[in-house]
Amino acid sequence: MKRILPFLALGLVLLNANLLSARTFEGTVTMQMSSGRDQALTILYSVKAGLLRVDTQVNPQMTATAILNLAKDEMIMLMPGQAMYMVMPIQKTAEDATGHSADDVTLENTGITEKILGYTCTKYLAKSKEGVTEIWATDELGVFMGLSGGMSGPMGKSQPAASWEKALKGKDFFPLRVVGDAKGKKAFRLEATAVERKSLPDSHFAPPPGHRKFDMGGMMQGMGNLPFNR
Image: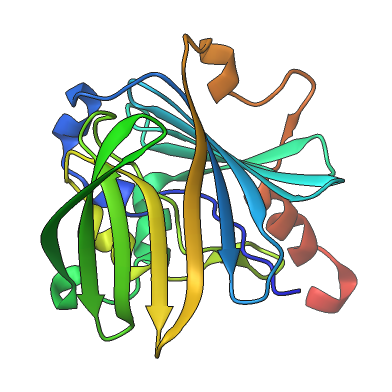
């Protein structure tokens, strides 16, 4: 199965600095995401004033977690199956992952509305060379910080963010349903299944106790001292 690990909002890093004070909600949104024939993934999207955490259950034994702290310009990635984590600047992550410009993406308000989980959502169409994506978004949950296009490879190199994420960047609404259409086939679906407003502790947006920071620079320096590198 092709794995899609939505580790966060690289559209987020393209937002201007006033996002830190933007209207938002505190709590957790539970989502289901599927792509093509891939098994649906469960995503817990937790947000609190300038902090974002996304937990993606890849399978019953593995959960991928990424945490963003806007004030620190910091992204923390917990390493699945290991009591370790990596830290990287948000801006650098964005440069690696944004890929093509958002200039080729247009967002059309259809004026059609529907209640989803008790929130009034408006149907938008995000159009780009990738195809047309249907977005049902509400203005009752503040700014959407986003999900990235995925993670792949042993070093977790990010793939470009999807066009619909770019279309939403900086907008004061939150998607509760996203349906991607690629050449007539519904290739992608993201749907919120629950919205829970609640107070979240700051500790929820930090590495768990006992986790050790992974030092990539130190590892590379150590490899440089190996005999075959002399």
